[in-house]
Length: 203
Image (cartoon, rainbow, N blue to C red; front, side):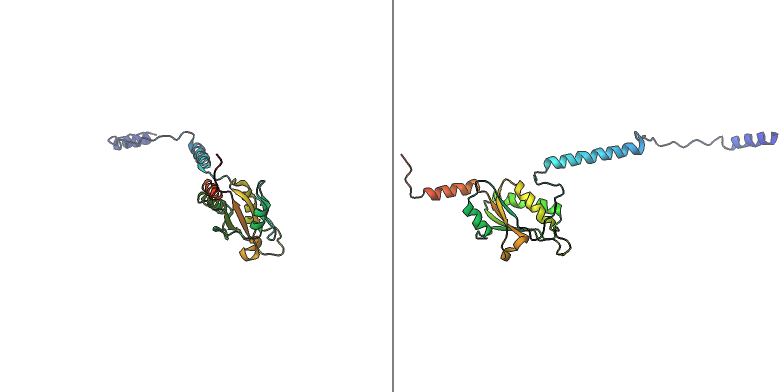
């Protein structure tokens, strides 16, 4: 026992001039890893809300049922003249612009279609062609035209779209759609001036 005490005294003598290292100041994370996860989750939620608030795209982003590749798209708003719609169905309007959505994913197609129609309206275009494709060509899959189903829903949601109809074979058939857009204010004014040309306004 005495030997142990002597050894302990000797050890303390050896370490008598040793000074403890100065530790770096540490900041404890509140709540540990769980709190960090909560903070990152909150940040992600805020970013999602901010993104949604700045996104002007009104098109549905929910899952939309696909359509049969050969299904004919057919839509006309009230007020569109039957003669105008007939010419649209027959492909007799010149296509002033064209959007090809082949090989696009649904998310990108949604963005492209919204931007395309918005830009066409800005430039005062009336008749455009949207190519959505027919989907996978497999006999065992009847309802496989995913983008076609989306286009059918999305075009109805855009106030600028007055009518649309699946295209003639030479323009893509049921893999494309003619779209009639509403007249811009500039186009309405132009038509008004053309109509009034040579007419004497009433006194």
